[in-house]
Amino acid sequence: MSEPTLTFLLQRFFTERLGRQLGASPQTVTAYRDTIRLLLLFAAQKTKRPPSRLTIDDLDAVTVGEFLTHLDCDRHNSTATRNARLAAIHSFYRFALPLVPERAHTASQVLAIPQRRHDWAMVSFLTAAETDALLAAPDRTTWYGRRDHALLLTAVQTGLRLSELTGLTIQDVTAIMPGASVHTTGKGRKERVTPLTRQTAAVLHEWLPQTGPSGPVFPTRRGTRLSADAVQRLVTKHAVTAALVCPSIASKHVTPHTLRHTAAMTLLAAGVDTSVIALWLGHASATTTHIYLHADMTIKLRALARIPASGTKPGRYRPADDLIAFLEQL
Image (tube, rainbow, N blue to C red):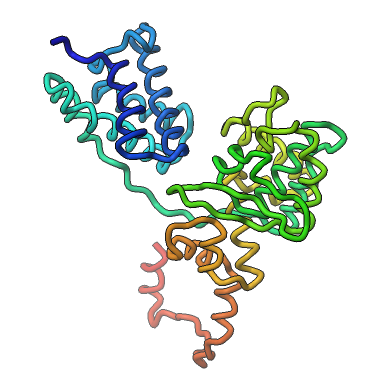
């Protein structure tokens, strides 16, 4: 019996393992697909062979290591993204290992590549003035500008993930008050309904007839879904425009996830409990929402104001001897 080809293994991985055995969500399948696609294109360029002619030995630990370096240096991916890509590759090799025991050495070496530890940075979000400047940036006299304005406003108000934004269909949106909302199936297959403010509902009510009778809420000109890269580009473009009016935006790396953080921080500043914010954002646990408590300086300042002063007086250190003072200045 001949050894299974890489094409056969990948097809079974997506259809059998992810689809039938694990019942993976569409978001997980999409994330794994993007990772494998990038890896195959990288290996194809390295070997000078088309992806369909690659073998599992072409995706050995050396190539996977070089691919991870490519993500770091050429694509400028974060450590979290790098680790997510590696997790997808590990998942494929754990599936493939029993099917190709002759390649156990290759698989085991890839599986031995560790996840990278990284610091947890404080979340970045936009202030009210920065949010207003970003929302005003698109030129709403054009079709693209109206689409981008509606997308940015929806993202900032609802806090939807990028995959949820691009996957939003016209059937998922109720833009008539009262009861205006968006329905999504997010991470972990969790369904949730997020209410819309009167302003967001009004903008979507005006925008939806311009997209067609069905399909994505924020489509391309051809009516297809926007890609994640396309949304990142439009957010970056409008952030640059907004920085001309509100210069503080220029110091921030504004991404679609920044808009999700902004929605959470707006709710927190309004006094909404973190457990409600967790439900709003679709977090698996309210503990995840604690990152916003760390980022909110107003909460910390209010806590600081409740602490009584210690009565300690400021003082200045003076060395007792000139020679010691000289030595300490060296």
